[in-house]
Length: 130
Picture 1 (cartoon, one colour):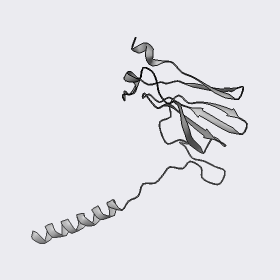
Picture 2 (tube, rainbow, N blue to C red):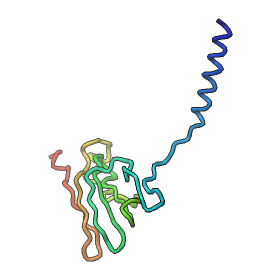
Picture 3 (tube, rainbow, N blue to C red):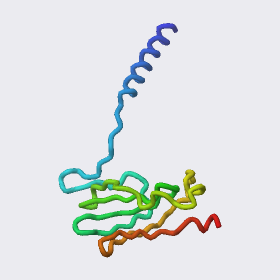
Picture 4 (cartoon, one colour):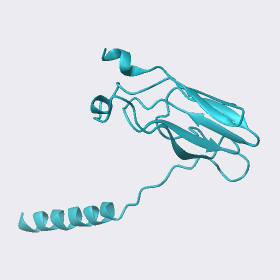
């Protein structure tokens, strides 16, 4: 009985040491050969809207939390995206929107480019609190 317990503990220790050395793998959609795999964005970027300026695509998405809100991503090929900022660094009134509140943020944005400026349109959640 004691030998079985010792063997079990040794085996469990080996399993634990293997699991502790496991490294996470970062998702990459670009296969490097002109092909890609889905999902392109392995994250929750809901309600995306995009526009193209010269040779670059810009995308804004819902954030559903308060601030920062409306993540902005850019891509040259619609496969490789990188985060470049937020459309909404703060939302007034600060005392309401500076606290994390899932679902009370902003969603369903739209992005456009005109006269060398980006415009992001989104529903204003302040009406919920009035």
